[in-house]
Image (cartoon, rainbow, N blue to C red):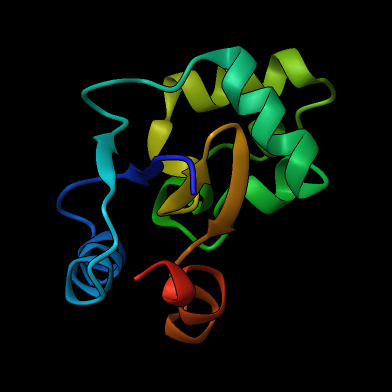
Length: 121
């Protein structure tokens, strides 16, 4: 397996659970806190395309999303989505699990991690 990268926020409880699961299962990974190392716009667009749209990448249940003015919640283009996420990186669902250039998962689900990564442990 290509090296595994976990993108998220170091203080996010879901990211902590995912990292703990990876460590307990002996899966090597590199964690990237996207507040410290923002995700580039081309990478964001690639992730969005792989996932089937920005809606799959953005956490619409987050307080950040809910606190946005209504007119900001309907970006009409990739450029508008990228600008919104650049301004509010916490809008990205977390963690985003990537191997090479492929998004394996968004969020953490123990069953899904076991299916995707358990055989690599």
